[in-house]
Structure formats: structure tokens, C-alpha cells
Image (spheres, rainbow, N blue to C red):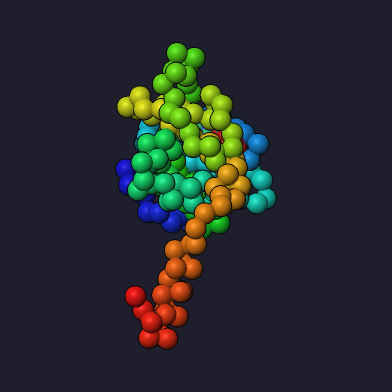
Length: 161
Ligand SMILES: Nc1ncnc2c1ncn2[C@@H]1O[C@H](COP(=O)(O)OP(=O)(O)O)[C@@H](O)[C@H]1O
Ligand SMILES: [Mg+2]
């Protein structure tokens, strides 16, 4: 099945099956009737931040070498309350050694945050906790934007390299 990347809350409600697969502090995951490859994650708190965060992380990694480490996100609802993610079923202890190594900025690395898809590939399924200071607090050279601004100023002054 393919899903439009942005759906109404009501479209998501119509897709999700009655009995949940699992529940966490922020979300409940439901199977989708007729599609064994995805789940719908519903935020049960007032603020739907967990889904927004995962959606943003997925969009940041999906064209990088990290893409196979993270459960694929297919669609989010207008309010962020619902999100469609690749279905990643619970691991058994024999799977643990085959779990991928997650980047240091993933905040919550534990077996239950990984799952296995229909093809047997193990990925992160809960990546809404991040240690962003690990990437944001990195000293380094000027940002791409700072370099671009300096070039623009040099061009205005007629001193472009
Ligand atoms: N992609 C998924 N496939 C299958 N089950 C999932 C998936 N994501 C989450 N779950 C189930 O739903 C539970 C809650 O989801 P989780 O992402 O851990 O939310 P929370 O942010 O509340 O911790 C998980 O513990 C797991 O049982
Ligand atoms: Mg969780």
C-alpha cells in the first residue's frame, strides 16, 4: 500500500485496527487492517511532539547511510497525532546481537526500541528521545550559511574570489 505523506486525522482513524500492538509513555501503536507492513502511532498526550520528532528525524536520515537503522515513516496527520511507520515487531533475545548500531544522538537505546520488519531486518522503532546536544554542541568551522553570506558580501564589494 502507498500512503500520501500528509493525511487528515480522520483518514488515520479510519485505517487503524481496533486492538493496539503496544503502548508507551507518549504513544499507542495500532496495526492497520489489510496492511501487515505498517502501524499507526497515536500520541495519547495533549502535545503530539513525539510523532513530529520521529517524522523530522526520518526525513533527515532517509537519504543517508543511516536510513536502514530507522523505521521508515510513510505519513503523518495534519495535527501530528497520528503517524504511519513501518511495522517492526518485538525482538526475541536471539535477535539482540543483530540490532544495528544507533548513532550517539539517539537518546534511548534498549532492546524494546528496536523491532524486526517482515523481511527480518532490525531497525529502531522508537526514536523520539534524542540527545541533540551531541550534534548541536559540536565546535567546528563556519556554517555553510555563514560561508554563503561572506561570499555574497564579497561579491557586493567586488572582491569575490
Ligand atoms: N513501528 C512499530 N511496529 C510495531 N510496534 C511498534 C512500532 N512502534 C512502536 N510499537 C509498539 O508501541 C509501543 C509504543 O510505541 P513507542 O514508539 O515506544 O512510543 P513512546 O514514545 O510512547 O515510547 C512500543 O513499545 C511497541 O510495543
Ligand atoms: Mg517507547
